[in-house]
Structure formats: structure tokens, C-alpha cells
Length: 330
Image (cartoon, rainbow, N blue to C red):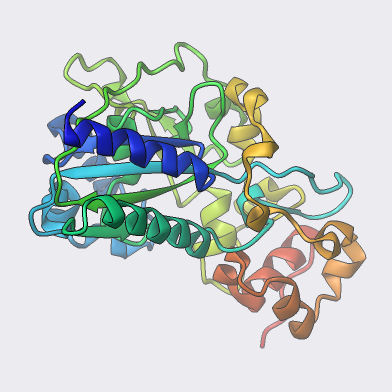
């Protein structure tokens, strides 16, 4: 076994030991033409809403070699957030990934450990850790690295595991043998598209393109409609009538497309790290508790949580919208 092949095998073993559910390798090359066209079309359609940061650093997004001098390999990793316990149906709902600690912190910590491990074998290797914030098409690279495929709900699906995963990447200036992309297994299924309560998933005309070899060509996600965007990224004081009608009991994010996906039946909470497990206090909250949520309780309950992304005022706005009342002005 060559030095590179041996290092690859050791990296994958260490990634599993650290709790990752999947680890794959892709070679650092520019994003393929059809995938890039689909991404730029998504932007041109305005589907990014007011997340204008996605419009910046196009050169880096297209060519990840610009993110790390001499970059040759992208290690893509997936960490499960499928919860061991679900919220009661008669209370307000959070997206599964928000039950525990902020995934940015958890994944970064594990990637630092992985990079330190690599340095014990190859001390001179340079690496860059990316977790959602770098200008990198992470689902595309995860697909290229062979750990899954991009489903019609635009999320990465891992075979026999589902899509309840957050992703992280480690760029290295060392060439590792690349893995092969997996076959897209969505087939004719459209459950996610049909189930989306806000009709935010739009089937793409690129789906039949012979040149397109990645899931980016299957569908578009219109963030302007998406309940995850509306309840988290949208900073307006009130939500639109259309959004409120689609919310049901959701006050932070939405898992409707995941719950509808047949592959979710394979999700295994035993792979989910303890950092993502919900607290007993969170799981015990009733609607009445949410409706009188104080700033102090919010800070205690969501310390180090991704829910802080929506801020206290945003969460109150969502609660009031679901309750059927307008959010009081500050």
C-alpha cells in the first residue's frame, strides 16, 4: 500500500473513531460546468433571498484550490444529528439539528482533532477546516467524495442512513486517492417536493441533462418560501401571511422534506454524538412555556446552540406567528 493510500485508510478510521458517520475524499479541481451553471442560475433566480453572502467569492466557490495554497484533496465528512428523542407533537417544534449544541462548534472541534491526527503521520501537511462558513459548495463536494448524493430536497442523502447530517470539510495540500461519486438513488420519487409545506422545492429542467453528473441539477430550493429561511434568516419584524399559514407548529426550521424522504427510515440515533442530544428541559417545554419564554430562560436553554442564530426577538416572532398573534413591537 502506498503512503497516500495508507494515510487515506488511517484518516477514514480516525474519522469514524471521532464519531463521523461517513468520510470521503475528492480531488481539488474546479466545480464541474453543469453544477456551476445550476448554482449561478439559482442565484439569478433570486432563490437565495437576502442571503447575499452567497453571491460573494464566486472565484473561491468555483475553484477550492484558492482556499488553501497548494490544495490537492478535500476530505468530506458527515456527522449525524438525528435525535434519540423527538419533541412531543402537541408542542412547538424545532428542527432536529437545533436540539443540541451548535454544529459549527462540534464539527470544527472534531475536524481539528482529525487534522492533529494527520499531523502525527504527515507533520508537514497544511490543512484548512471548513464548516458551513467558507465559500465552498459543501454538498457538491460531499457528493464528489462519494459519501452520498444530493436529493431532490437539495440535501445530501447518505446510503442506508438518510439526510440528517451536518457536513464539514478538511482541505489538504497533500494528494490522497479520490473516491468515486455514488449513484443518485432518488429515481422518480417526489415525496419531498410534494410534501414541502411552503412549496419551496422546484424541480429543475436540468434533471435530464446528460452532461450533469451531480444532484445539483435535480431541483432548486427557493429560500424566499422555505420555512427554515423564514424562521431563522429572515430578520423582518413580521412573517408573511403565506409563511404563517405554512408553519403549523414550527418555530425554528423545518424537517418536512426529510420526514417525507423514504431514506429517513434508515436514520440511526446511535450515530448521533451526545453534543446533539436535547436537554430534558427543552423536551419538557409545553406551548404555554414557549409563549412566556423570557430572555433569561432563552439564554440558559440555548447557550451554545444554533437557535441563537434566530435571536430572541426572532424566536418570539415565530412563536407569536404560530400562536396566531402579531409580534409586539420592541
